[in-house]
Image 1 (cartoon, rainbow, N blue to C red):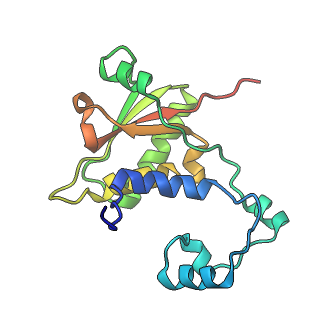
Image 2: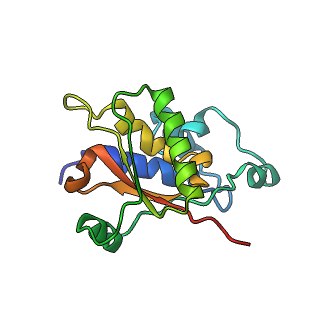
Length: 180
């Protein structure tokens, strides 16, 4: 067996980052001093904020936790229905040619409008980017959708089917407005 670790794909890293930001430990379990030193020296297993920030007391940690619900994937069945044309896409947004700040503002406005119109599913076209690396918007939009300002509007997202742009587009499931 090889001792080399498998490298995570871009989608796996985005998913892992989203998951680790949304969770909090049940309780702090101190590690033996040798493990702490080895772990911090190698940088492995540490979340980015663990190296720079002291842990928050329990009461402050609960207040600091985001109030927005976590993101969930669309699910295999819904993704298949959309790809086959059996589930309607309510709106589309094309972010080609926009700067990051323009795209961020347009995406937020678009999702707020979709939420207000009670849209269920929208398509956000980011483009794939040039060359072997994914484009800036292709990398940024999934991260933006994980932010609290977007999570209040979005249930989840997935890469679109090839018919709708493949890796250069995302299906975004919009939260329904709650009626009183």
